[in-house]
Length: 348
Image (cartoon, rainbow, N blue to C red; front, side, top):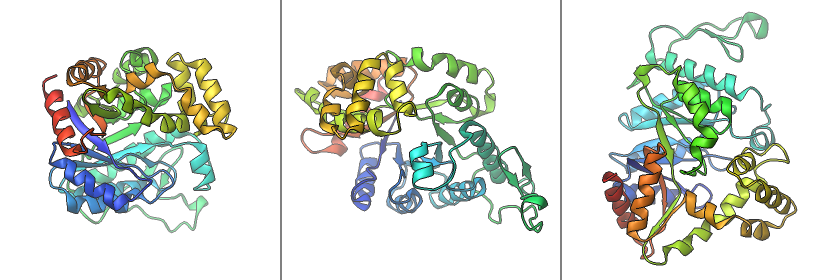
């Protein structure tokens, strides 16, 4: 089991990147750089290529709407070159509040768009011919009746370092899960509950994998959460409450919140409704207080070393191959904590 971590994108991102570089010494294999509606992720990933030597730098995620498919492919090829083949392209649909509210473009056809973007990226990276893609959602070059008529097929000038840059997809819904299992190199589920994951996602994962090209290899499943090891570490789980409440309660309107639906699918329907009502009413602390303790325990890794080892085995049994951790060291030594997690994970 590999170990990865996610950069904190809402604070001092330069300091967060430097912390990620230090965690490389603890054995972190991969670092995820989010974008959301903060600073762009690409600048920070470029900065990380200069700070690190071994770990994989990945977007976690770039949304599929605010950049053209060709721009996404260029960006991935450029970062892969800068890092010496250490880049992974994480993609996701985000949500209508961000896409329409922040970027001002329609939120539509996330599944079809994702499929075409993956195909365009891989065509461009292979550089076998000039890019000519005429899909339902993207036409490259643009047909004459949709523009000036002067567009012509082009081939990326630079030779990408790799033609098989890994693509990860953040997906939650049935059709998107199936697409991920069919076409992506890796999957980024959020709030992964080892004991309930198969009941929520298993059938769709298997349906997609039945169509999967063997050349892609096994699907890399990236999941995990906060990690704290030691006596009394269980109390640190409460740190996650505001973030979970934000997603379950505030990331979307009534009936249009993917995370709220996931929470319901896990069996917390009543709590999901109450959390959303409170959060949308501005009662964020009250909403956070309603996150069930058993859910906090299930999605995190907080407790004595022996307990953590048992939980790691449960994550592995549920299919997790890449443990994404947010280290919270009780003694302040996050590098040492990551090294311990890496040691325990290697024994699974």
